[in-house]
Image (cartoon, rainbow, N blue to C red; front, side):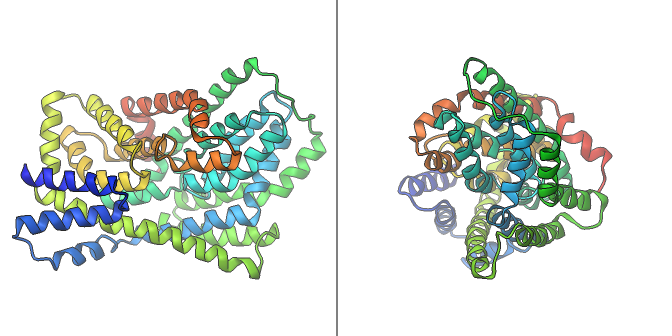
Length: 426
């Protein structure tokens, strides 16, 4: 118990002092090992390095690079323009376009921040020009960005799969239904919120205009089918799909003339910085998780939960609630990596499917990306819309409800995440 208090209190104190989460995990782990005194310090670098020795992790830099290329290369804008010609004449059409574009973009990028920062910049500006309130445009963009890491491919699901030793391919398939449910729930919220607001609509596009827009965006729209189709058909593994996505995004950038030799270097640097950040967090969490496991913390939490309830659905909801609360204060990916070694033994003790657990955890973390005071996507969209963050958070309330309903559904109804992986084998 003393060691539990030491590692927990030291971690919280370090984070309160604004020490980066990865460093805080490493320092608190080292302090715990030093107090114990039975473990040689050579274990620390060994565990840090060993956490990165996983083939599926190679997909992360490729998917990050693909997202950057899509944003800068013009692919994201092409997707947005197509859905605008298709749905722009509907009342609230631009808001629906925002969600639909995120669903398609999710099949290419796999990161919520890439959606919010890249596609979001186009969406928010277009919605503001058409008379939508800036805070509403930002709220729709922030909410729809959470779809990216649920619909495959997904960087957080890759990380969870590696840490929980679950098939990344199965996790990708498991995220499809929940991701589509999120999109439907958000469009329902849009329909309810906008029914009393009189927004101008775009003129109905002619068939020729729709066809022209479709042809212009065809290769961008095809990207998710190429990537996911290749994974599901067994042509390439989820890890190899990252390289395919990056190559495809590079070709798209050349087609849409958004990528030139003089700007590709900056895109590579941007991708490397993002990848280095993720990699450092994964390494730190590997050490942190090993220390927690060595001293029986997951077993302690599992026994505590079992004393509260024996129902696995209730236990899963309690875990999701804990993740939601922690997500208000801890970065989503850091939280996921930190908590996976703790919750996986709990899931096994309760008989919870680890694939279902992964999707639930990732969705809970993605909601955290949009909750103050640490919601990164919330900061991104409020900056793009040039409105205070708390005004956007207030506008997000109905979208929070939609996301929470989806989270509860996939927690209580396992088939929403487990059925497709059972019939689609990779």
